[in-house]
Length: 191
Image (cartoon, rainbow, N blue to C red):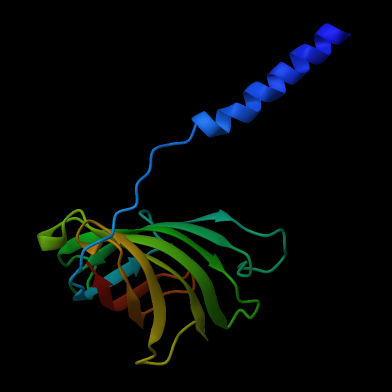
């Protein structure tokens, strides 16, 4: 019994010493002054749930009898970003992420979005910004000129440490499945 107690105390001692000697190396350095940049972007976002080549897929839906299901429905997306309204215009990147439908009212659309907008051409090739925000309730077919604002919470590449906002203007919702074409005007503050 005494040997077991000695062994137990030795183990406790060894475990207590590990945090003291196992600390990682770190050093805090005062950062120099940084010049904040402002970038304005304009592009079109195409969310397509219908047809033979959809860009957004239903990945989870609540067990309810509502048809079509809306509240609590989760979608994954890989949507193209283009320079013009037409999907066939110049492709500049894509938006990959998730959105969760929040409205119980079938005549309204509201969702929480998380998406990473990555640019694949031009001077921002390889750079991205992250949008994480709530899309406020709007009619399924919004009135012309309706503008919504969403938050930019980060970025990579030329948009490192980005914050800002995106103004969204739905330009069409061509069918009841939920296809959407949205004009984006983005203002990014970054270093």
